[in-house]
Length: 588
Image (cartoon, rainbow, N blue to C red; front, side, top):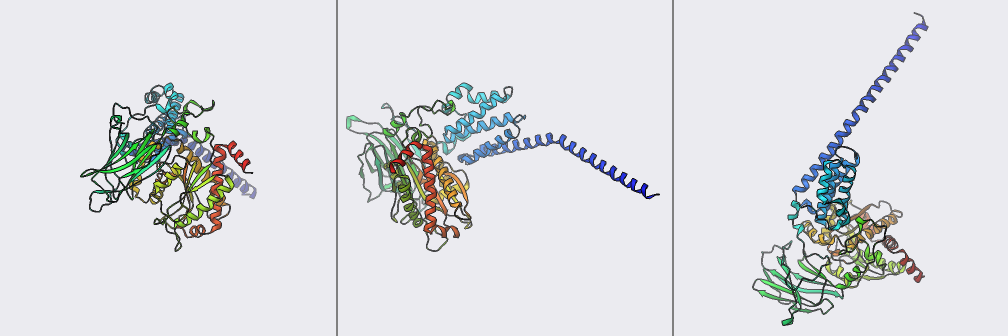
């Protein structure tokens, strides 16, 4: 065979092989193309089953229902099904379940935003899937669609087993409400204390009465040596015998301490006095005589056990009632009902700006806070140094009045810090702390605002700062449910976002290994009851050797303060840019 023939055959074989490979590749591509819809449908179905499993676990576990992040986890799973296949057969079911879960969450949180989100999801279902069987289910859940659009904040939410959980029975709501009618008293409310000290189970002892007040707000604290059960009741005024309206609290299995001041005169615009007495052999009664009030709240804190009574007057609520109407561009779904303060109203619509800031150095005195990774370093000293620097910078750069809750190494209770801010009519409350963790490698910066806990790390941080147990943090969630509708929750979230963002950007540009742990929410005693936007800043981890070394460096402290001030300034500019410019002009 000649060489030319051999070369021709080799070329022919190579050509045939190439053709075969192309045919195989084409067949494989065609197979994958045909199989893709089946694989996608299978994947969507799997996602939906996972979402249903999450929902079943949530509904079967009342303890999970107390935590917002468990609800959002299930909601996000159903949303993912819809987003990945918006026109698929499972899309209407996914939208329905996400909307229904948001409405159930609103039942727990009391949040108008949660309720609106649920309504929006169900209305989207009704618009996109008019022929779906889930449309009628959505209509049944909402009642009639037009009504739900007009008054989303007042729409009832379907009942669920979760209604029987302790989270549905908080102390009386701080939501504005009128005083009870003379014809009848409100029913007594009984609350079980979350903790006892376990030293023999003997009777509790009332040790002291404390108070803070101004014309529109008063806080009374009853200190006990251990937890016990209590119930409170509001009595109407009795002019015939000269008795004012009274709020009393009965403590079961309780004794009155020998050194207790039995009558504490207050005589502000709201309260006449607070007095304690041994009502019977096993009951101590504490009575608060009321001159006037608009709403009140009673709740317990632990370690040590104490009862906090917050009383609000007409003044603050009267201001809220005079707020101007929202701008015409606001959508109907976002207009709050007349009985509630709309989000951002206090700061945006009253145009008060920020004039007075309370800075709270955490811990102090006998409370050392978290120990540092370096010997002899403690949180209480570091945060006091940072707070003093921060106060100076806020005065110089923002022109605001600054009040420090403590300027020396002295002990303050957590409820006292917020009471100082409330009674001094502060516009912002900023609590300064350093973080700590068992894992000494943990590092970073994070900012918190008061709300239900969103993750386990947030619960651990709140437990440490509250000097209480993780179980008590879970119990505390119930206290927060009636706070969810307050405008300050929304404002606190905005303030936290500005502070965290500015602080991280500022530190990242100057130091290596700076971690942004983000904005989180958790139930902090020190923020509980604050009447203004309030945040707690965990500046760095004092338990981390590198960050502990930095925290003791004055230059690092200065940079931290620069970042915090930049965040506050950004919040002020967003809230009221005109007032801020005017303020800066006067300063110049």
